[in-house]
Image 1 (cartoon, one colour):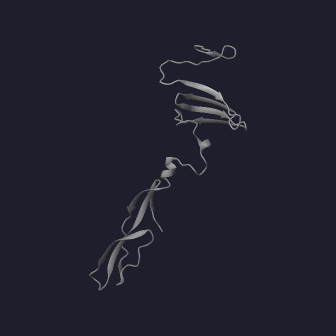
Image 2 (tube, helix red, strand yellow):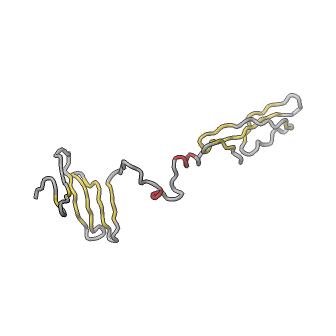
Image 3 (cartoon, rainbow, N blue to C red):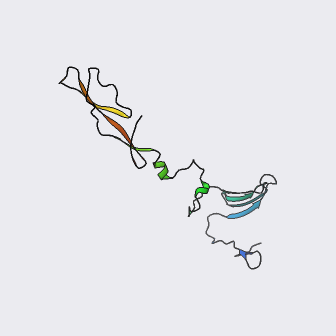
Length: 160
């Protein structure tokens, strides 16, 4: 049966099936089922295979599947309903969680130390200069700087 323009259903309402006759492939809807796990499937495909289908499962639920990528024009409905708590972060939340830059802080000169040299820079700091002090037999002067990191919206000194 060939019907051009429309298939009528109901009182004056219609479901249109049209073609501009310039498609590279034939396309069609197919209603089928396998009598088991897929009792009712409505499928859209073309000569190269299926594009998408809607399926009624045996438990009454519906599954909608696309053979490819879904690219919505409007992301307005992608909100908190689709986010698992604690599993997804916005760009801002991610930026606030990770180190984005490192720098040396201002130098600290703790003064002269004895002949055995400096013990250790404080936690989060590193030695940046050590030199002999000619005014003492074994004295050494040294400087250390704190290591700082940019996380979120400010510099933080590493303290441990």
